[in-house]
Length: 227
Ligand code: DX5
Ligand code: ZN
Image 1 (cartoon, rainbow, N blue to C red):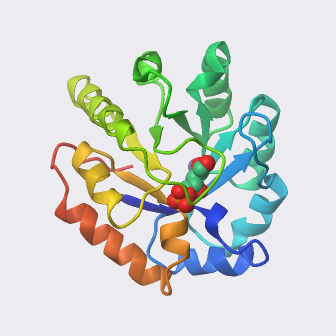
Image 2: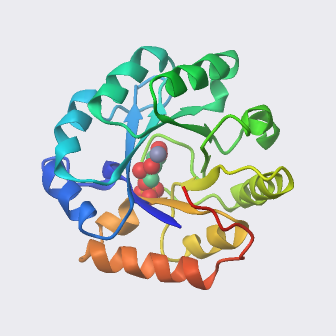
């Protein structure tokens, strides 16, 4: 199980401080949401910010590109210190070359799917990726309500993973809090991205510990994956 605080919910005037705080919380990954103002109606931050934060923690840097033209961004984020780069399946024909490009850069590959998109679209890529990220809100903003209708997608992704003995992790992103995380764990997710629920907590460390305990208590025991 991996807990991934999302920096999108951190204090924008104190990214460095909040990155260090996340690093000391026991969370394994730092989720970095990159928005281009086109694929999603919001803009976040770029590779220079990631490069600045990189020396502050040993956490795995999980870069989620919500961008229409990610090709030009892969190398800058790889050089900035991304450990994994996630692109969206909604990019259609561009997905396969992007996957190979990320692999060529020596980074783990993530594929993300938005709530309205048919889960069948990810199927051809499942043996080529390290991580499948299921959006549980429509991407663009933190602090939105969890969309429960996305839960069957997690279950389906877990069934495919077991049936084909594949090793990709299944992540959930958006509206994940101490309540909804239990449903996600039961559905088969093993990476839990959480922004506002973790950063708004008085103690990030306590919130991460609580979230981990809830996931453990709701583990369906279907997948015992190490990433
Ligand atoms: C949404 C982002 C999420 C977001 C999650 O577009 O991809 O990573 O930060 O934030 P919360 O947990 O606040 O929904
Ligand atoms: Zn994200």
